[in-house]
Image: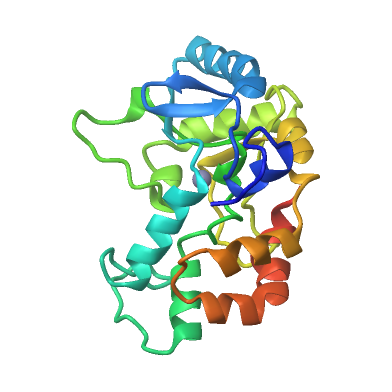
Length: 229
Ligand SMILES: [Zn+2]
């Protein structure tokens, strides 16, 4: 979509360009730079009887745009803040905020970085259970695994991984299952520019584009910058 070098590191924060990815678990790709530390964390979990299972990893701009647009068009369900199915607002700005309740802006998802993953404890997951990635799971069947992660993080023994979506930062709800390799994500985010993101939107076929462009500085203060940690 852009006439620039595809290896350009400046495109990586937006889920564009060609990140150097490795397949960590079947179907789940991460930045090559974090693979060793993720393996170390996974081995530490194994040693304690857990099984670090990845539920989401790298996601491209196109993938996030597809999720966004399908929600905007009513092809995927919209959920309220309480997690209940809701009517699709007709006002574009209201629709935008409704999508933002559960989905990141394309080009501004931390999953674009290749350094962030959603994890559960495969050892505690009942046979055939479909993981939802909800606070209830974190506090329920995966509580011991999350306590293990928290303990490691607090002790500085989590190989660079930490939680990002914690209470008190911005408007994204807490996500205990989402962990980030901060040393690497900081490097990727050095190249982020809101002006570049604006340009990407202007050239994209994003739903609610006018509402997003009109509110972009405010959206960045609430949904993007608080999570550059
Ligand atoms: Zn996530």
